[in-house]
Image 1 (cartoon, protein in one colour):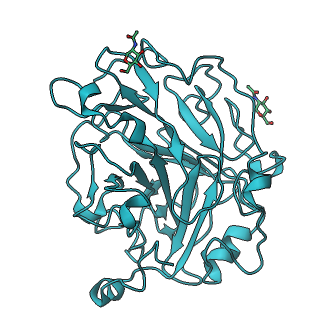
Image 2: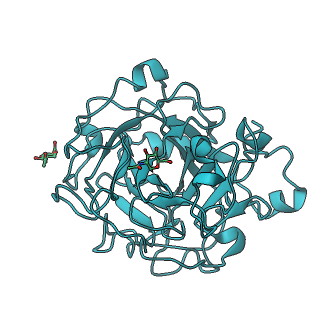
Length: 346
Ligand SMILES: *[C@@H]1O[C@H](CO)[C@@H](O)[C@H](O)[C@H]1NC(C)=O
Ligand SMILES: *[C@@H]1O[C@H](CO)[C@@H](O)[C@H](O)[C@H]1NC(C)=O
């Protein structure tokens, strides 16, 4: 379990309540498309390109038990039919054209097709209430272009892998102030770049969604919970502790590391599909879709890593077959004159 570094975690950190109940597993990419059922339901195309993992994904996702709509899952847990999606990353060449940056499979995940690593964390057994069917939420601020300076409590960060094999260190996303940055790395990363997005851990106990997809959830009273530091007290407005959802995506930026091709001004060349050249506007979208009470079961039984007694898993040979058809037909692979949706870099 070196990926969590739990064994080598300093005792002081463990004493602060580092969780021991944590699912960590992979989901293959199912589609890259310009739809967004959470923020722009029914809008084809949506404002910017997303990539998705999981199934039952279309431009408008009904507020219902989506685990009953999907016919397959691209995740390794058979019971997880949730939808996970994020913005894509593009390389901006010196001549002003853009190319989508492919993904690579994360440490200790297996033969996924690109994909995402998903974590669900609880402080211990019987401490969280799993999401209800139809629940969805959003984390991040697409318009942000400045750091929050939340230090280890930051909810979105990047890691510049300094060498192959994840720079030899995949420890504690957003927790390692030496290695993680809130904005996109400023120097070439020989091992690629990891994105991390962390979601709030308190819920109002009533609403499955809210107009901005954020107000029905909240951070603990003493501020956002770092990765796996989930023992904070929830505010009275949002008293129900929910599992901490956390995404990791590893971008294979290695083909774009030639500084001769980087902007002459000396800035880094990567932009999010929203037009964000800083990375501070990184965000994640989540639609819950675990079957029946399976997520509650996992959280209550100290499940850890990619397996859980009582749940079943499939291999990536099967998970990779779970795909959906692209809705918006546009070039996602060539050199583009502009970002899909015509986003300006700002
Ligand atoms: C999306 O999927 C839902 C459920 O399967 C369906 O009711 C709806 O019509 C679909 N919408 C589109 C735009 O395909
Ligand atoms: C722009 O630059 C990229 C990378 O250097 C190159 O592959 C591409 O062919 C160039 N496109 C044009 C239109 O010059």
